Length: 298
Picture (cartoon, rainbow, N blue to C red):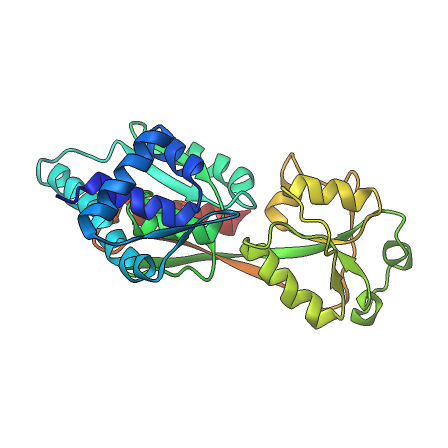
């Protein structure tokens, strides 16, 4: 018999493509995970994954079945939540996913307000790549996410919350800063630093650089906004940094300065999302409203 555990393993392996990472996420040893995967493939009489140099890759059969597996895992989680709701057991915790380019600089204020209004509520916050977290939300591994738009996934309620300005920064001694009166043409040919290409940030930066006639440093991808800020300060290149980061204690203008052309108004749109049929959708909506209030007032 195919079990829910095997379905969850199938989905997690599809998302990560890595046995070790999936085992850690599911609280299993790699041998136990491998055994469960073999049992599932034997039960289905199908090979779901091929081994490739980078880990695991879905076979054509695996790609055809993975969305159905996600739906099963998600429905199981929603069923358990619905049972709690019928018994009037309140959601004591929310598994909350957020992008590392946003969470550390916005969520502290949100947590403070949430704790005042719902002192028994606990947010288990997990930072991660937005695309991956959207898949984890659909699969029922997360209850709610906060992410740059677009957010995609079958059966999700997506609630746009606010827009966050994006700021171009340069080292204080850069000719752009010294000049002061900057035009868009002054940025043509300049080099910008970026994060991992799987981040929404990277895709948006590609659009910005194409618009400005600028380029992205191809042989380096930062691991954090802090890394980008510090490398800009050392003169490696320019960067586009979110305003919440720059206004936070971690950000600031100790090593960088704003260097934007006249009329610059680029931003990113932020949304919350949860499964439309989630038993605690009303609570998730209230959390989203609090996040929107804090985001708009920053």
